Each structure stands twice: as C-alpha cells, then as structure tokens.
Length: 267
Image (cartoon, rainbow, N blue to C red):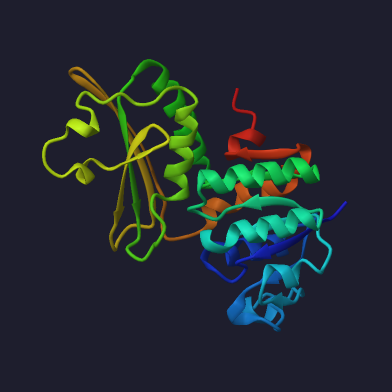
C-alpha cells in the first residue's frame, strides 16, 4: 500500500533531498508540498524531477486539503507547531524534522496526538551516527555524573540550541541531571559563559561559518574524560534513510515519540 505524504519545506536544503528520494521510492508518494516561495507550481518543475508531480502550496493548511497519510514537517520552529496541529486534526500521522521546537510545544503536540489517536515522531537529527551518539551518551550518563553538551552549526542558523542538542539533553534528563561542582548561582564573573541549563544539562551553542551540524558531549571524571561527537558534511543525504524509515513506521504507534531509535532495533 502506497503511503501518501505531504511535505512541508519541500524545496529547502533537507526537504528537497528527501523529496527526490521519495520520487525513487516504490511505496511512498508525495501528494502535496509546502513552499511559500514556490506556491502554485509543480514540485517536479521546482526541483527538476519529473517524477514529482504534486502541487506546491503556500501553507500547510492549504496543502492538507489534499488527503495524506503522513505529514512531514521540515520548516521552522515558529510555524511547525501550528502545522503539526493542523495535520493531526486532518487525521494524518506526523514526522517532525524541524529543529528548535520547545518542550512546552512538544507537550501540547503529545496531547493532540493522543486525542486524535495518531503517531507523531519527532527527530532532531535523522543521521544514524546521531542515533548512536544518543544511545552511547545514555549509557555513559549512568556511570558518569558530569557532562556538558556543545552544539555547533552554521552561522545563519537562528534556533539555539539545535534540535539535536535539545533531543540529547531531553533524553539524558530521564537518566539524571548533570552534576556541577560549582553551582551556577555561585559562579564568579559572567554566568552566561557557562552555557544554558537545558533539561538538566549544560549546553553551549556555537554558530560559525564552516560548520554544518555537529554535536558533542563531553563526560568528565577525575583524571579522565570521554568525548562523543557527531559531524555532518555539506550534504543532506545522511538524513534521507532515517527520514524514509520514519515515514514508513510513524503509523505503528499512538502518541508522541522523540528520537529515531524509537523505531529502530538497537538492543
């Protein structure tokens, strides 16, 4: 059975790569796309991919008039929540690839997913190396009580921390909060230089030219440390396989799940 997908952010850096990969798929079909700057055109014309015949709409609300099984959001945090809520009301399952959504917004999305009995899978980063970093970090946090997260991205990335860093901090919060030898309120000097406290972890966001997306977590113990790091290159291709898997599996549960490992067998 073919899975009908509405893709918001279909002409962006990651969305366009995903759209072209869907065009090569035998079990997934793009039935609608969202791109404000390319509205009222065919997605195939925009991306020079003739197998993509779906129309492009200016808003998710307009695109959702076309029935779909899965709504995939690759947009911006200031519009993603409204897009997801509209998709759930239309009876679609949802995959969220948008970075920067807050925990409060996720709580509201989780409630809506339960209400409409649909699955929502939120993934800060679809790369397999990120999934493994998260799992390794969860193991390390059980044994090492002190760590800090460093979030690297390109200089024009507006949201901070990144979705990758937020998701990592969220997952570690279920194990324990990181310990601080010197509590933040006892810091002498400029406390902001110690980073932000995010879900019980200290997070530092760096935005500079030359980076795409990188995530690093450093665990420290007396006379030893452990560093786990993911680095992405200039292509969005590493995210495609995870995104396609999310589309295929998001209908297998009800409610909100955060992290690609929720649909992977990593035991």
